[in-house]
Image (tube, rainbow, N blue to C red; front, side, top):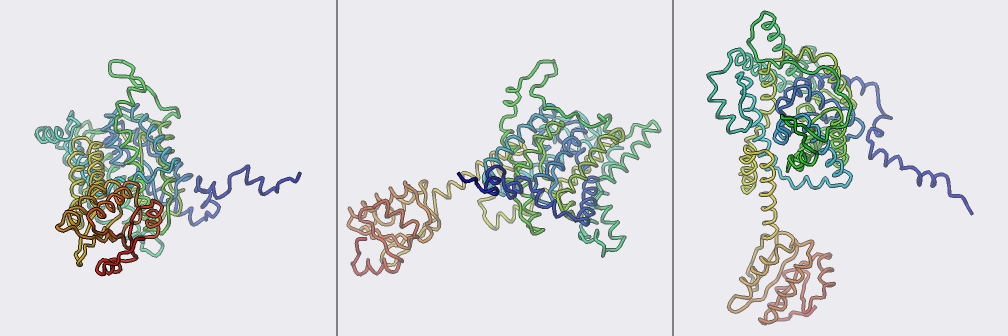
Length: 577
């Protein structure tokens, strides 16, 4: 008996290199790694790291969690995405939207936020393995726009209390608005002044950055342009550091002028499985099943929104920088990041548009830049936590407000109105319901979008023309929801006319049909024969004609084009096909 060739045996026992590269994209670029790439990745990673630290501290505040949880959640993504990600630009970590969603589901309870990260990661990884990325296509752009606008307003206004130095406000949006205005007389002057100064500096630096293009970091740029670009890019870190020094100076002289962050936990988080139970304030143990039940629809909304946000960012920068991404591999990278992040006390994360933009503009060459960012965050956890004690909450609020302000895209509403007015409906439903509960806004918007999609399927546009004989043309395909409408149009225009009229169905735009449509066609042919008039199918695509012939429709007549059908009807020479 002959032994199989060695190459064939190897292929049977081991996965191919192409398969490994599909699951571990790092194998595609690591063998080609260059020293120049290392320099650019170090620069980009460091820049993003200095941008990320103050941002993630602020986003932990949005999530209602202790500030260190922002850092706990921010470093795992850099390591995992380097192994599994397919975009050189994307950076994973806490974002404003995910923080808001997390707060709406867990209400600022750390143990539950960590468990939520694990469950979201499992759902996302399973979607990747089952190739379910197409489900994201059912969340329409108006729903996304409505949600992001409402989320930006909710998050931004939620930080006004920190700018004013107010405490003990209810978390519900409308109550928060009411009590914020009611308590304005209680505002602390120090927080207001510092917050407004921080906001002004951040806006000024942001506008300066917009006037400079990304070439400011390249060798052909002047030193002053490079310096201005770097300062403007790291504006969050610089403003928070400056505000912290001001707060420290006043505290050192015994003046309690600002509301500061206070004590944070120093050191790296322990690596351990996320808790599957929790304690209430009175010491009652809450079991796993009850916690999951409390998450409710958040277990569907948060994984989907996390994936949607990150995929949209990855696609945008892939198009901008001329490379392609693998959507299902991106799902896997996000899912594994959330799973592993839960082992270091992280809450759910996704791609960050702002930090990804900084990464791209700084000239990152590979996902390895994320490792540098993660190392900076780990160093902050290990050595800088005592310094975070003096960070004024007003400065973090200013960072958040400036981060979410560009998300309020009012121009999209006017564009929807000009292009397709019906799209305003899911936008408005999502926008308004998101102020009640953010996850309800998304669910409501998706439901309205789905209803509009189903309506367009059940009521396809049908044009009726009269050339002596009636010609009915469909602007799109036919499927079972449209059979009742098709029957109504045919009967009202042809069979109920006095006298009944022959009809030509122009099927040039119909590429697929199903059993229900064929059954309707069979009934229509029978009805036309009973009224002594003719139904002719024309412009049938080969795939549709093949299905109709297989269905063996009795007395079916068809022609290659409409003109031929009209000529046959005019001459009275209608052939049985």
